[in-house]
Length: 173
Image (cartoon, rainbow, N blue to C red; front, side, top):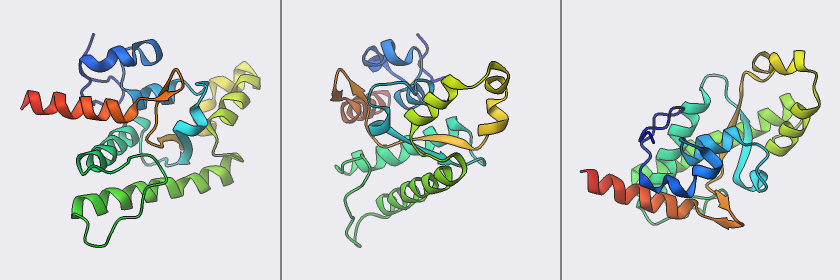
């Protein structure tokens, strides 16, 4: 198994056994964007409109945001707890970046009529093959934003994945 996600370039370590059934050889965030029919997808992610970023770039940025929150012992799932003004600068920057991304869900809703990944997956299942082949043209700016949750068998394992990722990073150092 590769140790780099082929979609966002993030390092994935041996903890991918938690994800292999859902994501294959990719990270959890990229796995979400490839599986819009997940049972809890609307609790795990939201559609945003961000044509200036690839999905892989969005996932890499969000991973850094979530890692920053986890490193400071903060919850990573949206909506975030308010931060005190004297919070560390990197935490304030991460919170601001995440809020800006979440704001883009309003644009997705205006353009697509929804910000629900499940609604998009359902709509894609009903379109003609010729339109489906052109989905990149039609949805070129739509991206999936992780809300800091990843459910397996009804349990949110994303916080555990962040801890394991952090431990693997420390061990590599």
